[in-house]
Length: 454
Image (cartoon, rainbow, N blue to C red; front, side, top):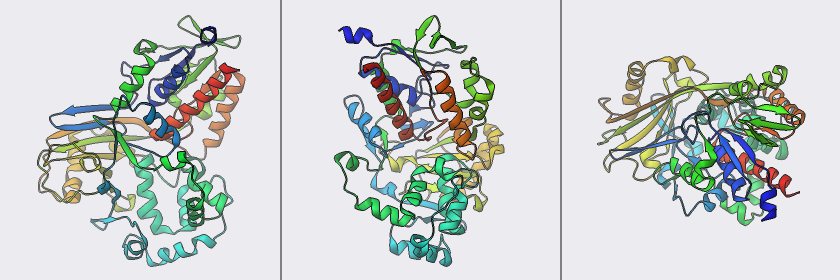
């Protein structure tokens, strides 16, 4: 009992997935916490809706079992949630080229036959293991792919892939920060192919085998995960509506609403830091606040009776080279069961992004007119008359890790060194996906638990 009383409270700023996951792991170890949230909604951008037979998401639509931390969190919450894995049909991925969908290759034969890549670039794949590794730590993704695989792989594989993850521009994003696993493959093994083969041969622990990279959601929607985290944290430990949060720093301590903390963890966006932490010098904050965010409009479309093309796939991505208005669309009712009425279909579309930010300024009627023609053409329907329309615009949707990332990370380190006990986290570093957020939260929790146990 004495040890429990000795544990010092920790403040967490932001009740998104990072903040809630961190709060969950700290609370599990008996460490008192308070989570401060600006809005009246707990869960950040995660929201799920159940309406007339459609279950649809606002914010992230799914996660990936790409690290053990995510697997362990879902296992720990299995009494409160039911994990849904993507249907086998969703393994098929489509790319739009020359006014039709083409499947991404999933094996040697399909890789040889695919019209997505030029014959020259297919030969480049054979040469890839023998190329010298890059020596520019700030090389962008586009240059790396052109160097190792060729322009057509950039145009019809990597560019749409980057649109799907970052809504970003591979000419801007730096591989080392945006795709660190890919960067490490080249730097460690000298080749993507050799690295993949070598890693496949390495002995796998029980934990490694659980990291299946499968796509997951939660039955009823991802907000059920948020509810489970709230249950274990205790809603009384989450303060919403904190619109004028102003943290003071004195004598190695932090003061929030007359409460003293030795540790404060921020999970908020880069542009929100200055108002919350007025004691941090502008010259230290500026490299962080310079972080760019891609604006995105997310559109949910539901059809009670689907009369279009076969949608037995994960979805389709649209390369920028194809000059369409849609970045991509997910076939949500194929990926997860019971997301639409039995004969119906549910889709999530994305427009805007780093390449077409002007599209996110359109009003609802303009947006629907813009996507209507593309959707009818791509999905082989005669009229655009969805039964469900849900539109959400994000002016700062996804962080873009460009050449300024090194200075940003250096500033974060300097601030944390100057103000011991302050941790700057969230998507300003360590990735933008759900699994990235969970992993970061678990690592920070481990560090803080270790400090309190010393």
